[in-house]
Length: 235
Image (cartoon, one colour):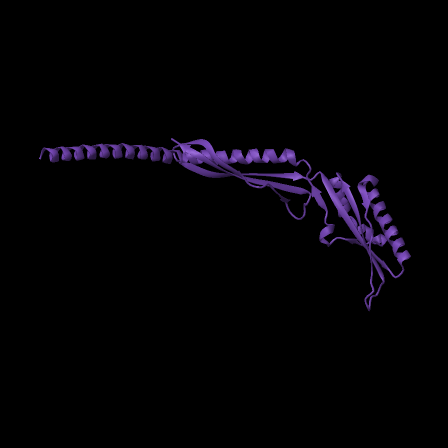
């Protein structure tokens, strides 16, 4: 009887100890989860930055086509047409150092029914930082018609390429501005929620896109970047 009493008392004490231990553990887990949940009060915001920049360089490929049944005469036509175009460019303020005459691409038509034996496509390329002058030249290609020269303009590889060279200066400013705008959005959200904006948790910077403002002004580029940032929200 006495042994049974001791055994029951031991079981009771063990149960109390286990219960107390589980209670303490539960409180610790609760407090930990509460702190985590409080620390994970976050807001994700986006900041946009856009900037229009004028190109400071331009590459203009000028293509022309000639044909003839005699190869020597074809060669003469290529040279004559090239000289006319180069003279036109110089008259419009382009220097010799900014002009490069490409190698003629000559093909012989051997198929039945061909109306001409030899054809040649040639490209003269202008690389210059005189962007405004280049725009005038592009708009004056029709003047070459009076000299018997037809400039090829519809081919995809003969489109003028306007270039902004100072990318290393522009990009950091865009990124900084987009992050500042994201922070302003986060601060407004926290204020509306009756809290304050805490430290940054994560940040993602999207790729900087560069595109023409519109088709009529290909020399003006729009730079755009969006930064996505997650902030902690604190009371």
